[in-house]
Amino acid sequence: MASRNDDFLLVAAIDFGTAYSGYAFSSRTDFKRDPLNTLKRRFMLEDELGKKMPAMDAGMVGDSLIMALEPEAASLCCRYLPMNTLKGSSRELLADIVGNDVMADFSENKMMDYIDLFREFEVKKRSFSNQMSEKITIKVPIALNEMFKEKTGKNIKDHVNSLPRYKDKLQWVGDKIRMEASIAKGLFNDACQSAAQHLKSLFSLPEVKSVDTVLMVGGFSESPILQDLIRKAVESLPGKMKLIVPKDPGLAVLKGAVIYGHDPSVIEERKCRYTYGVRTSYPFKKGVHPESKKVVSSNGEEFCGGMFDSHVKIGQEVVRGESQATRSYKPIKDTQTEIEFQFFASTDPEPTFTSDPNCTDIGKLTIDVPGSGLDRSVSIKMIFGDTEMHVEAVSKDEKSNKSSKAKAALHFLG
Image (cartoon, rainbow, N blue to C red; front, side, top):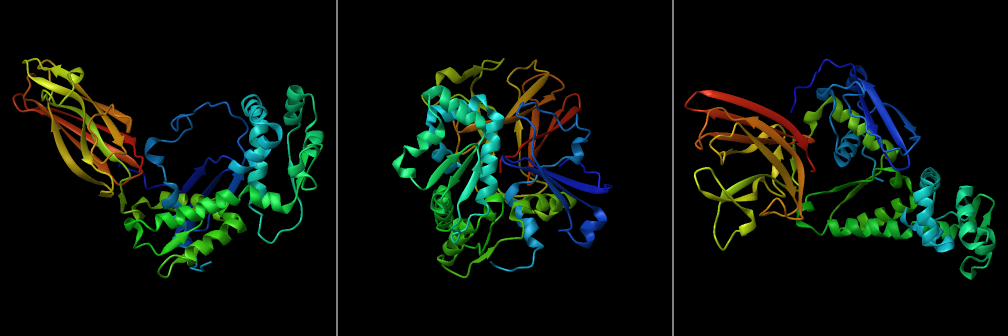
């Protein structure tokens, strides 16, 4: 991991969300007194221009910027809590009323209105409960009615009144939808049921048999309907399971990210979700390797290029700051002055080629190789355990006693 400047006064975390984005921060002094004592704010992004600003351009030095993984950040937040246990359907509703073609045009041509609409649903759904009986009002951009009228020649209000399934249950008035509680609750029933079922399926896996606590975090976790279903799902699991719903579950990730920024060492090890390795060449085996991947070295030796050389595999535990393996690689041309290493992640425990569809390019590193000949070597060391994967390469020519080093930080997918 790059050396961090521990002489900081504040740690800030930023969470970019679909409905809301937010930030939180705390001083080093406040963190020592109470790790959960953070100032936090939610804010809305103003546009969807897609413009990217590197952290360096924003005035942040590379060493000062680290990524926190959401599940870990949430668990760090809950670690300091008192241990008291405790979209899709909305779009389908609208598409059922105005048609998929209108919704597709609306999302493509009125992006900000589209985002505002589902932000409204996002906020409302957090207050839905199984006991609610009053009607729910959702504000809808006028542009949607205008697009529907342009396509069909009808107002949405008149169209809704002509649909028997919504008779006396849903009204479209001006720029608002008024719906019965039964329809509102039904909007998120599938999503809630799916989350509860997924939880049950997870606990059928041997890898999670030792887990005895379930944390509910994120904006949707504020929904009483989801909390009720997850609570029932947890109670149906074997053993004594605890369910923890922190206060303001939507802010748990942000608070945890601030805690992680103060002390990244609290996460000591991680279990890899992917196989990580480097693209390399192996001696060519006729009848085993495809002819299309054959490459010939400067001394006439045949190799199979584009092969995946694994350094760690799926499910392997990696300790923060430690390398799991050091491998040596040689040039295939005696006049090579540098070697470019390409690194990949794969969902396959035993990947063969880096061109396989289950492989993802996660970065590269180029290192100078002093001297000449094919007996030179470069050692590659991958250091895991942080939210970034760090790679170190060392090249040394025994004849001239010259050496070179190179380092890079790559995407760590988990």
